[in-house]
Image (tube, rainbow, N blue to C red; front, top):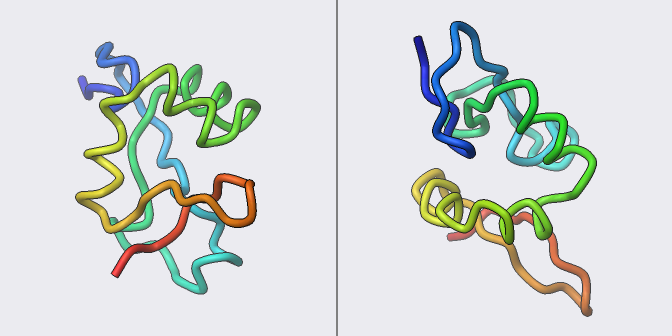
Length: 84
């Protein structure tokens, strides 16, 4: 059993969810580019976008920061970006 980082429920199997797309990151399949979510949360995040999903699950800000990512405002549009 594994815990979904978003909803905190336990599941037999979790999805590996991109923090940013591979095309955006230019990176491969290293663990720092993924978080593990249940299929329901993964689907919801894909439909809502990170900015709206983080309103629903604000505790994920710290999870993403620990992996080196943050939601930043770029000309009025919120984007998930690698932080230095």
